[in-house]
Image (cartoon, rainbow, N blue to C red; front, side, top):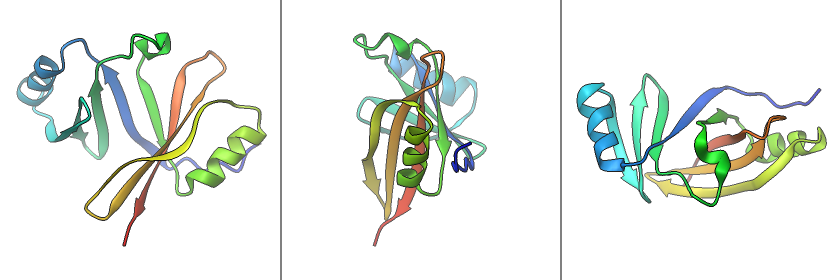
Length: 126
């Protein structure tokens, strides 16, 4: 048993073929609250869960499925707990975005079926 304490789903990635048309669909037809675009990705708020739209990376066949991003309070501790339990690592914790006093940290791993999952921590910055 690990000491990982998942706090909820922080983000879900959905891979799309045409980002501009997908943004229009999710914004206009579904009425989701648009947040921002960065790095070829678009983000929406779905009642507190962030939805990320992105084109798949052709070099990574695992990106056919959605990615669940699990919120944690301490990504470094949580990562160590997963690794100690024998979880397959994809990418260790790293800061991927910072704005307005908050830094986004992500770490990627695989479930037993090879599905890519992620840990997610938002850190306040001075």
